[in-house]
Image (cartoon, rainbow, N blue to C red; front, side, top):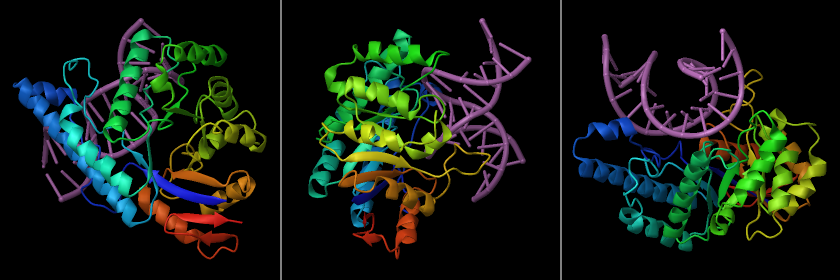
Length: 320
DNA sequence: GCCAGTCAAGTCCCG
DNA sequence: CGGGACTTGACTGGC
């Protein structure tokens, strides 16, 4: 089984390369010339996308084949006071550059929109805003000429005091999501509300790939045993053009269990890999750690020299 | 140039 | 029911 590691959105090694620079609506409103304010938003967005390209080059240079793009590339993209702003148009060229680069340096990239994109809300306006944000992600992928199938990880959403009802609400709302947006989505078990089994229920019913977050599972489960669910999780990827993907992180501390630690505990990771080895030929593990790419490199270093590990390159290895 | 506070979103928690 | 916590990185303001 080959394991490929990825990391999230920004680098601690590459300086001044934030893909998430922003302007709040309060700042925006202070600028009297609205056109000038919009131009400023556009300059920030272009800078974010250019930094994204720098990050991709950094990744390619370090043999990293898997990366989560920032979902904050375009500040105020879906703000209700800016419905007339065509935010994609001024970004066309920068986005195409990314697309061209990715054709030369193939890398799996995807998004994880912030947790306020809630698809199971009973509130129409919130659903409509969630959909707008997903459409923005779709446009970004189109601009980069990336097939948008299975490129957006989401959580199931709110519990609303009745999780069973909340799951049915998800299924109900799913009918209002255009198919081209539906195919973008993957669902992840979360650390406070919806467990692996609950997420699987939706994924199987609606044909959505499930992203297993091991740390979330340890924080939130009916039963801690997960191996009997693993085959079902793998099965949700059967129709996907992409390999199974999952999230790996370690608790910051016993007290702050749900928060992400700076680095990933290699022992926990190895133990996990031994349990799933042989179940898939290839798996992509997204490292969610405070130290971002440095955590990925440290984990690779920690795994070096282990009997059962054969290092392939700076971010991949084979487990036997 | 540092530290505390603010910002954005939706849900959840508390009184 | 209303206000604050939660989360995250970026940014602002006070000193």
